[in-house]
Length: 488
Ligand code: N01
Image (cartoon, protein in one colour):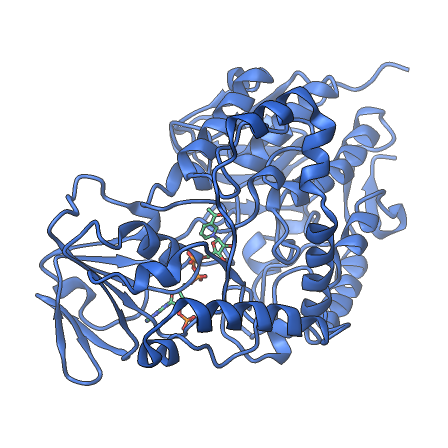
């Protein structure tokens, strides 16, 4: 039977949007466009260019399963290498010609069975299906610190690094102790006159061996893909992934001992000054916040041109940062490594589905979607890495591939003419939310009482609250009874 011709719009040409492009082509969809607001692909890897940028998951796991990269320079390669990987993969799979750059979408409305999209340029497009691949962490979170605007030096967010500002001979303050702040300190200690790390909450630091891969190793990975897969999935790696998940879901709190003991040993053995060691000692359970993996943070913070500032920030003044003990720390540059607003997703796009339902009304309390993918009243609108989707520390690239496998089955139904509209039913979403929130309240992120970007405005963890295997199983096939289908 002849297949229906379906027009698909993908929003965003980052890791997930490129994946959508590759998979659409592979499945024979040729009427699609990827709208990208910037002038290059890459998403996170295009926007973040701070010194020390790297992935915080192992590089070989941070690739598409169908496009491994035997040539990563190390376990945690520098950000520009990852950007090159995405640009190269995009070109190799012929996706670039489907991308419209500098094309930001303002709104999308479902009218008479199709999505009508308005671009900032004034242009319009009409599509049968919209795939939002807009990313999770891309709206900078600017802290509510008094006097931010009074600073006379240079101040910028880590994801808006100003490369015109020279660092040599400067006094730099970095606020924030997430992966980003830790990576920046590691990169800049000794490269500036002074780098101060403002640490409100000390983090557990998991040591990681980032020795560069030798040419010999890379050659063996190139010549033998099975050797690469085997190197990725060593028993040790699989066991640690399993144990990590068990701690998050609190199925086996004995497993927490491994993480605590390893991080504790890292702290005790790496930091020689007992006073500094105590200042760096976290008071929460490991994994209660996203765990930081770093090969060299403790070495960096002990550099003679680096300093830890554990005192709370009172305010920012013209010349620097005033801490709670009354001291003014004179600075030339302040970097806000203060994370992202993790509840934005496609926003500020205005999205209106059937019956006049808007995204803002559906998400009034919190962002939600059935299995992170589909929403009632938004037929044929699907998300990659949508709300409550991230699974533990698992790379989002793997999560997106599984989600695509699921979405592709809906696209097939539409293309086969089985129906013209598919979205999760309101009942299915509410039942899913109930189960999800109940499980989320049992995770270490909730029970541990930590503050982190994993929590929504009401303090409910907004990540996948079950284990990875359950996620993979759920992504195998849609349960069609959970969906409203129109035009059958
Ligand atoms: O942000 P974060 P991030 N005064 O939200 C502090 C991913 N990532 O950009 O803990 C003082 O983790 C805040 O303090 P506290 C990765 O998934 C990926 O580092 O709330 N401090 C915290 O220390 C990661 O988890 C890669 O007490 C203030 C920090 O800012 C996620 O991005 C690389 C403050 C924010 O930490 C986010 O990491 C790096 C204030 N007023 C990161 N307000 C790649 O793979 C906030 N803080 C590319």
